[in-house]
Image (tube, rainbow, N blue to C red):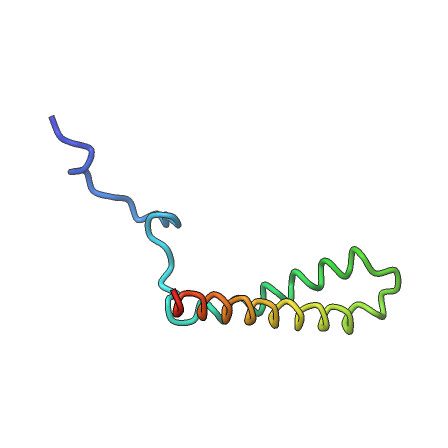
Length: 81
């Protein structure tokens, strides 16, 4: 009787077991995500469509700035403790 571990694995992509190797540039992927979130949010909340690019870019800048401030605060906290 053979064990299940001895059977060959399939060539299917298993995202939680074999994640993509994006260790070097995963922080750069935050920028497109922030832009997409801010555009979708402002599209839902804004009454005039011509305001969307300006308001979405302001919101994206605010999100990135607060993420950087939170990262700096957490880094300082971990260095002090």
